[in-house]
Image (tube, rainbow, N blue to C red):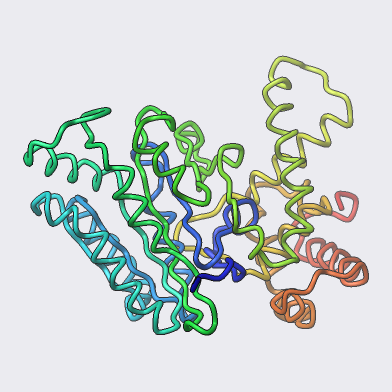
Length: 372
């Protein structure tokens, strides 16, 4: 009875997440993928983006190597977010009992702040290791092993942990606890026991693809397999109008791209769709530790839907994004305020913004007048 619907977005600063799989405050969004696909990097970027937002972050490391935990802490210190971040660590050297209890300790800390009306983000890195620690304890206690030797209540212990994440009603303080559990898959097998368990508990998942990671497409988010079941309700309205056409164009592009490999001559419409799809894929790529503010994301996505970035060369993309960001800070302060106040982009604002972006790209010599 104390819980409220998820209605406020939690911006991660990652374009592919904030647009295609948005996260709301109080949501549980799973991050899963094989080893070394950038799962922790994604979570750390989300924590870094909470700087100066008032969100308290808790990073819970379970059975990680000491060097890996130290690297995460160093990055959090480097980007000056340790003043609003708590690290709860039970490294691989700790006993199975300590590894088992670590996420519950992190959640208890998070609930303390949530009940004081604060917004909290908890990252569990990772629940696969937590399940193994619990299996070790259970087998030592001679509990009957079930599927993959995990005890029968493994689903229950994870659901009990993740069900603590919520948004409270204003009369109960209005705080929220957002969970980003991480799960490691083997050979891209999402249907293994622990991944399917946690997929069924959470409100969506962000799937990181090994083939995309190997091709250098970073972050390696597979938009086809990723979903957010409640975050769309919290997403800023300015995103919603842009994301639909982008998703449709990108899914069509992925289909076309696989067929285009076998054909030497393509008609003009197919070429146009391929060019738009490549532009969308390039826009969704992003370096680590470089979160993009909300207004800049929306302006870049708008430019992509308008086709203004279709002819931008790969080595000129960063320059194009900087030109758009500068334009939003100087000439379009009213549009910036409208976006942040949950207003949709009006046709007049869209027309003015498109013209100004076109002029900015030409003035910066990113594209020629003929190309836009």
